[in-house]
Image (cartoon, rainbow over all chains, first blue to last red; front, side, top):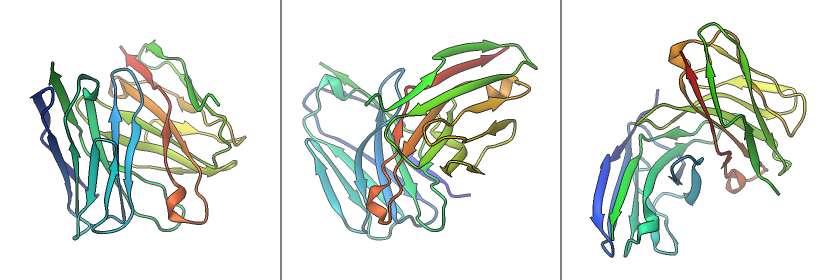
Length: 113
Length: 116
């Protein structure tokens, strides 16, 4: 089946620093999603990308849908302590009735005040 | 709106026991999903439903059953619990409209299940 490689697995940064993480796939997707999961909670959607090359921002978060449709990037600028959590990328292809999201393994972000 | 609610939050089962994980959404979403999340891993789809009375298998359906008798509810049943089913289970829902831009999946808070 389709595989997503998400990197890095974990990051430990200083407050105020910028963060970059990415996701690559062995096959193409026509939708890329980025989720954040806090401890003991379900994932919450941060950004959704629907077109190759698309660059979308949500506050301090910016994500891009790679031109090849096989990758996506998430950047967080000026990190703050509440950014701590696990960030997941997910890819999806529309077609038929299937709504199958393929998730990466996550990037665990720790922010040192 | 409460969104997606799941019960129970935690459960410990003995091998061979059965249980039902409950999921309810009040957003009138037509699509509902069950995922499991193992430590250090992303979520994997167990089953999904595109509407009342219609269910289909996801990536890891073995050992589970689902039903969808109403739009709001999508219970997940474990018939013979096994240690390999120790995981955190998330239910999600989305509204799949006629365009591709409507399918945002909203997740519940999860059920942490341990099988001993």
